[in-house]
Image (cartoon, rainbow, N blue to C red; front, side, top):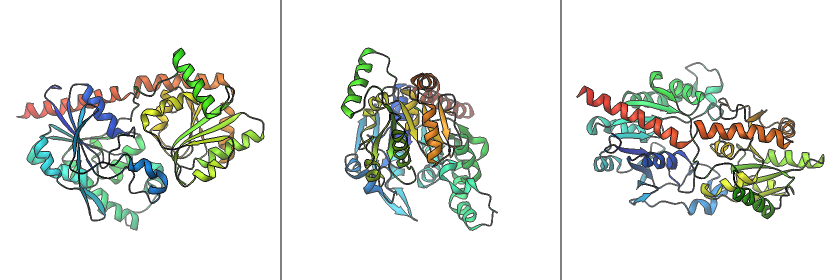
Length: 408
């Protein structure tokens, strides 16, 4: 049914400069010949961060969307709606009217709880589309998942009222809830009201248009030229981190590890791309280069110029992008689901400087880095490409519509 299928994907925020699911899933579904629409609000990405201005600054201003606009972008139609705060959370204004205009066969909501899926579930009986949701909350960012507490505990009761009950109402109208990791899946059915039989683990992906390894003379020359431009020698071991420079992400520990290794005569360097409250502290380390946020389409060349990808605390889709560029990874033991790093990286004790230094030393030789990097790049190309993921989603959408047709 691909030629006739109309899919609406709904996200709270959308940024053309970010390589997140909101950009990638619609892009690759559209490439499969589907009529794809994206509906979002006129809010900047990560608007809820207390340190938003410090972290994103002018980069956020350059990605702002205007309410009421509609445009064709990357093969799909992007609709931007206004918003208002209701009960402390942002809610789309005019979503029902837009749903009636688009008349989708499939609605894919990124979250499984909140105003977006709740409004979509309430409209579903009237517009008769098939609703799919997702849940991306990991155990490392959700404290209730990491501690035992009785059901009458204050935080448990609050979660039950604000998440579990409305989430179950949404689940009744939902076909499937996609979760990128096993811990996300468990949180969805334990805390967010999603019926367990409707939860499916389907990982996030890599945009292979931009993230791929050095495989040609041209990309090898590009790597060498960029390293020289950044001030790195051919023998330097460049460790890259991309993302927010927040206390939670703690990229500063990588800068400290590089400093300790340099003091021992090791040729490690740091490359940091992003911004945030730790920026000034990172910049005090002489063997670290700091660049500002940039559109995700530009990041691939920097990964290919580096030697190791390091994310010191919780999950980041950037790990997948780096692995696709043949970088071995170092991640923390705070990450529960480690399928993306098994066989192509190392795990260190989160926020433990000595542990991070030891992990970096384990990747001192190019032979070890190349061996792990090849495994990771092959894994990303085979199992983590957005094309493969979009095809799996589309197969589920087709099956849901076929079931509806059989019943009618």
